[in-house]
Amino acid sequence: MIDFELTDEHHLLERTVREWGAREVAPRIQELDREHRFERAFLTQMAELGLLGISVPTEYGGAGMDYVSLGLASEELEYADTHLRVIMSVHVGLNGLTLLSWGTEDQKRRYLVPQSQGTKIATFGLTEPAAGSDVRGIQTVAVKKGDRYVLSGEKMWISLADVADHFLVIAWSDLEKKKKRDTSGLSAFIVERAFRGFSSGTMKHKWGILAGNTGFFKMDEVEVPQENLVGREGEGFKIAMFALDQGRFTVAAGATGLIRACRDASVKYALERKAFGVEIGQHQLVKEMIAQMESDYEAARLLWLRSGWLKNVGRRNTKESGLAKWFATVASERAAGDAVQIHGANGYSDEYPVGRFYRNCKGAVIYEGTREIHKLMQADYLLGYRVDRPTRCELPPHQKAATTR
Image (cartoon, rainbow, N blue to C red; front, side, top):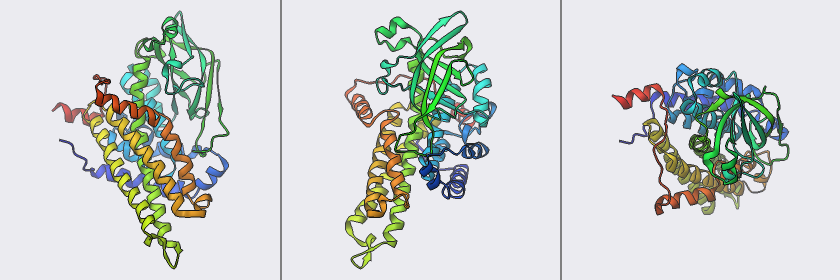
């Protein structure tokens, strides 16, 4: 039976992250956004709150909380600012939870533990200058030489590119299959910033998520030990798709938080601003936009909660997480546009937060599967062209106990 009732632990987490965002982030985010400046102190504080390993079992340095907790944290973080949720998506979702399910015990001890504790920061390397939605377009290669793989290539649009210590990288390990664009030739590797031949840079001309760090990294014959191969050779595509399931879940929950931020800002402004002798909240079309935000918020929240529930009970959730991501991100774009409209000329000024919401929302409609890709996926499920097969789904310890009783 599906149960969306939040526990006392959930409510405490939600309140804690919300209060932290209001206290530490809200007073500074306008300045950081204007200066395009990433604040590393937020990482330290998030680690202290247990957020950087929130759904990782305590035996691997995490908080051992469930996936609904990850969603709640993502929603509250994006309510404060999108770049904070991005940290959860790449560090926890795309990297940490993937290592939890696919990594060896040695890899979990060496990499997942310090990541969960926040002493090391991690990200994910899939996108390249010529490869986004088309994973087969990846050009990065990994050539086996003795007990090592030599990686060469460039990754683009990487969150935390100039901040992360560890990178989960997808590359071609079978060059013959690369020629045939056969994804069974892709493999996954853990690359450390300290490895010789690794370099990174920050992209300085993006127009959204300005307080976050986004960039690229290059690998010039980087030697990666064989023990840093994640899974087996040829499982890179499966691992990447598994990672995207986790990342899309956090994006969906985060976009839901952005809808709520747009709603709250719009309600506040509609009660303060007067036009034609009355508060603009009394005008029918303003009411319509605010009502749409509320409808979208409630629907988006239910969609990501369903995905979280499926994760908690160990069931495949690619379809559900994809639907939640698609709906929530498109709805957040609509909410942000309407929020700017409600604010009128003031919405065009960064003295008000809605302009930042509008700039930030667009990225999520593109990354981790564009809205067009997700439309195709959902149609393929209905038409029978796509059928998900069971895959690994690692549960938090207390959830394991609950499902095996």
